[in-house]
Amino acid sequence: MQVSEADLKTVGRDGRLLKVRGEYLPLLPLHEVFNISPKATSLEQGIVIIVENQGRKTALFVDELLGQQQVVIKSLESNFRRVHGISGATIMGDGRVALILDVNALGALVAQHQTMAG
Image 1 (cartoon, helix red, strand yellow):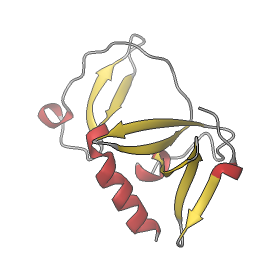
Image 2 (cartoon, one colour):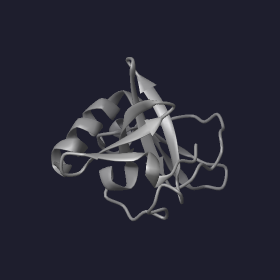
Image 3 (tube, helix red, strand yellow):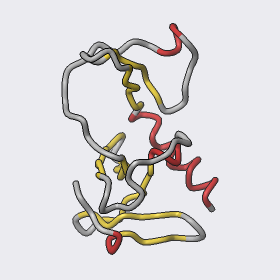
Image 4 (cartoon, helix red, strand yellow):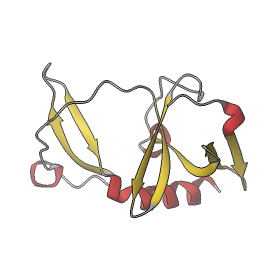
């Protein structure tokens, strides 16, 4: 979904909440969590994805959505090592490797990100 900076509320020093349909959700910019350079630096440039796990919703800020498809997920732990926040990887049709986000680990990622930010 597309959102604007007007929907963003800063809590504490650097904690961010995003107002979505009247509800404030923790905002988790994935480029900050995984320490990578973003293509989109403002909410207007990127996309927010709402995920829910165990009744808790989180707003993920990402650069773009590439589409939806069924894939075979390979474990990183058995082939490489455990990567916190990533459940596995897959090889796309064009040969690129795509990492699969572990939605179950989002609660810990949100808490860790908020602790580091504030």
